[in-house]
Image (cartoon, rainbow, N blue to C red; front, top):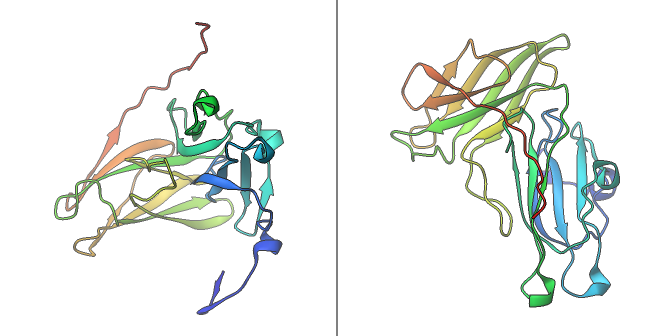
Amino acid sequence: VNNKGRFEEVAKASGLDHPYLPMGANFGDLDNDGFLDVYLGTGDPDYRNLVPNVMLRNDRGEKFQNVTTSGGVGHLQKGHGIAFADFDHDGDQDIFHQLGGFLPGDRFHNALYLNPGHKNHYIAIQLVGTKSNRSGLGARIEVVTNSMDGQSSFHRAVGSVSSFGGSPLSRTEIGIRQAESIKEVKITWPASGHTQSFTDIPLDSMVRFTEEDPAFLSVERQSFTLSVEAN
């Protein structure tokens, strides 16, 4: 961690000092508590390195908890690209995992883990740049909420970088815990550095912000149920 310009080694205290042997990795907020969790795609084609893929839950930014077994995501096949997204539009992030390696005997079906859901709220944000790039890459987002515990701020940066074999979303999905309302959303655009502020945004919704436009657009999304059918 960066402590006033001086870096301190906190891997052991944070629960991150275990050699997990990952090849792919990505970040997402599985319980919408505002803290990014980590999923690791582990292993290699050698059976001696056959280890479960790993889920680490971010405990309020203080440490990481290994919830692989309780979450049911400890797949043994070699892990590659990982994507977090609300695939079924029900308000929580699911996990898509590309599995298997480059050898013919290492091929395997990909996996989609559906999130069972939590009681926390969220907001999904899509940016449209005009002076900035179309996708708003490089923009900074701040969501300010009100709750019984007071006011909280949630920060995200919009980027194009992910891990090996993965890709970020075209929208930014932000968990906002037990927020009672969204006080304000601030967007700082990359080209101009200008910050726009928006209010009266509903909880548990997807909204689109266009650079230099003072209004926002609510985007309707229909949730659906994914089912497994035998071939």
